[in-house]
Length: 523
Image (tube, rainbow, N blue to C red; front, side, top):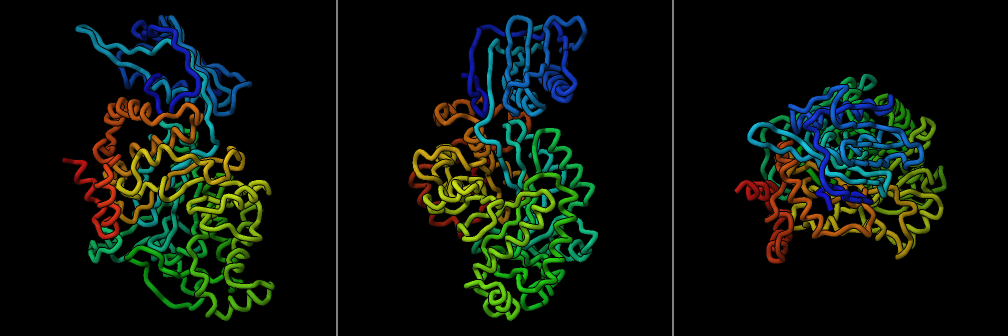
């Protein structure tokens, strides 16, 4: 088996190599032009002396095969030819990603050359949604870092960036309709550091916001890599930053600052004030203009609905709509926002901390908490879709003592259903990176790699072909590739800690500085 991550689904080795030393004759159909250009760049990055000429010894062709799956591809390399077939641009993109991992640069005394193994690969993904979530509401990283992560996502055939851009501690999208979101919600006076129970702060203002033009550029950059950017406007809870700018949106109207600490803060947009829906609709219109994705995440998790009991407007909304309690008022809120999105051609996603009675069937759940399996099956039978992102297996913000690599790799997404229910209703998987305790690229890389590679294999490869020992072997070979990309991945000694280290780490992790792991990685 070749050292490809995610593992390819069908491979036949002919033996020997295609040697590009004699030059390359490159041919491609119009649809494959971007992938052909990427192939050229990949080869030249490995070996700058390779010549692309009309009389090159090796023929490389990108061809269309409409019978292949939309994201599938075929690579056939033998003798002096390399043929890449796909039905759509995504397939050629992923073929080039596989080629990038298999190119072998080498050097003799006189020259440097590059080869590709003679083989036939037939490959296509298990799930259509293969996601990574970046939280920039807590800590802001900027355009350059997001594009770097998009490049790494593409390398491992991930196709959804779930971009968490609003939360209690920050709002990161330029707004022309509501300028106070730019002036107040995008900055906070200080930031808690050192862990959940720490009393330490930076003493510095934290700020950051993407202009509309920057967002358009990032969305276009992602699209070139077959990545869809799914935005998240987290409402009605996790809205302290928005409420700091527009306090009238809350139940009390109390004026507050953008929070400097983390955890569940309990403030929310009031679902009882009718004028709040007009505000949110106008805000949603701004976001829809920036993000062409058919999916739109609205959060809707960890809402302190009990606080709505003390709000006269919420109490009246419960009565007027014939609801039993404030929990049903949250469902009503989600349905109203969902109708706004559906009317704009968007399919809403919410965090699935529970299954809600009466929720619009067009709303998909992102399953991050354990849910009753029989109810999940019933929801799927009724047409509901699920993205699987369990916090104890896929939350990359967890330390390795809580979430070892092996635990992430071995998780089976269909386990949210009853046995033998299959993949139906599960559109895919996602690895969220919450950034309360992640301040820089060093921590991003340490927490994500090799975990993101493990998730990518679950998302792409048939379950029957997965093997953790085989993955670890391939991962060892991948370290050199990530070294070339200057990725600061976690070392093996930390990714799968022993039972003693796991118990000790799990006991102290809420009080520990989350950068202790990274410092050990540097030793």
